Structure formats: C-alpha cells, structure tokens
Length: 87
Image 1: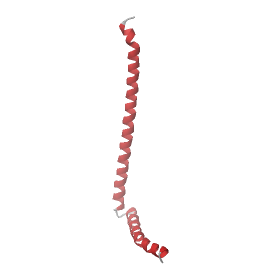
Image 2 (image 1 turned 120 degrees about the vertical axis):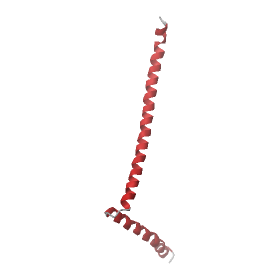
Image 3 (image 1 turned 135 degrees about the vertical axis):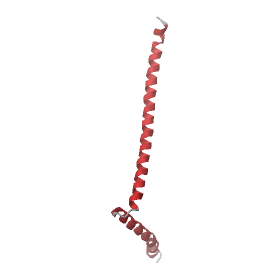
Image 4 (image 1 turned 45 degrees about the vertical axis):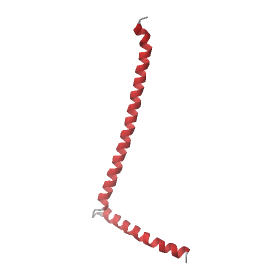
C-alpha cells in the first residue's frame, strides 16, 4: 500500500466532518437571519402603527377614542372600587 492509500480513510472522514460543519454553520446563520428579520418586522409594524394612530384617518380617530376611554377608565376605576369594597 502506498502512503496515500493509508491516509484515504482519514481524508474521507475529514471531508465528511467539514461538510457537516459547513451545514451546521449555514443552519446557525439562517436562524440568526430569521431572528433579525422578525425584529425588523416588529419595528416596521410599530412605526406604521404610530404613523397611523397619529393621522387624521379612521384609525387615528379610533385610536384617539381608545386613549380617551382608557384615561377615563383609569380615573373611574378607583372610585368604583371604593364604592364597591369600602362603602
């Protein structure tokens, strides 16, 4: 046997391990890219919501009404709780 024939199983194993390593690294990079992409989607949605909520359209008016309702609820809730549990 020649020296290359003796080393061939080791070389094949090394090539297999290199291919598996490259596949694992590609998988890790894909998952990082997916996480980054979802972060961009969340930020874009938040920015679009802010733009729409401050506008003069139907969504802006509904958002303003919801804000006013929540403020009124926050002021009225303590009064209701006092009447219900203390008086």
